[in-house]
Image (cartoon, rainbow, N blue to C red; front, side):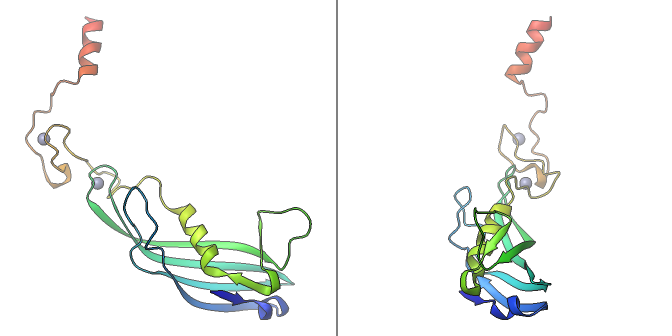
Length: 164
Ligand SMILES: [Zn+2]
Ligand SMILES: [Zn+2]
């Protein structure tokens, strides 16, 4: 949906651009769709002596398997983005500014790009996730599996032979 920002550009002060929803349910990361429910967006623009800054706040449920133990883990994500807006870019393109031709801004498109770039590359259910037992595959966060701890690591075994 396009937002008309003419009022924002012509009047100084803070402008509430309202609440919006963004559907990112088809976005796939590592074979899962981690954002099944609509993203809640709140947008606001501040005109300071003609310079317009856009602030987008995004809230959504992020649901993806932990990288270590593979259990599905939900996290409430709250992200905030800021952009400088101009009606038209003079001369060569400048990544620091977002162009809003005819005062029109595609808020959803901009927010989608912001969010996708901000998604975590590494995702753990908790910082001290113990992962899965390499022998039996049990989730070690749920308790010890009883497998022998001094399982032979072939690399360590090779090292031991080398040192002896
Ligand atoms: Zn985990
Ligand atoms: Zn085990």
